[in-house]
Length: 67
Image (cartoon, rainbow, N blue to C red; front, side, top):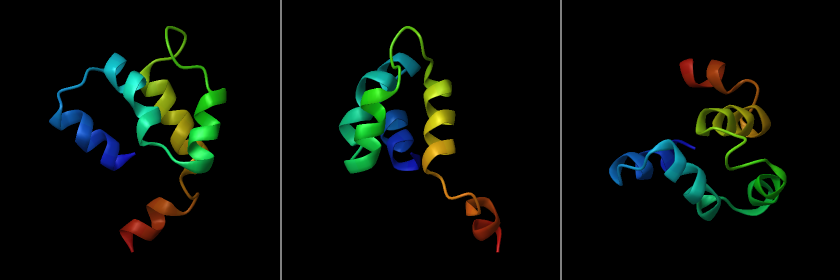
């Protein structure tokens, strides 16, 4: 997600552009998950991002980063 957002910032993509392009950056399980995730007018970029991170970010990620 961090890499994708770096690319999006570099390209000056708006939230709607991020939703259009994010699937190109996903692989394997994340790509399969995204095909079942509602993207488009019913979901915002922030909703997608929160759902994605809740699904794929290790639950102890924040504590490991701060160690």
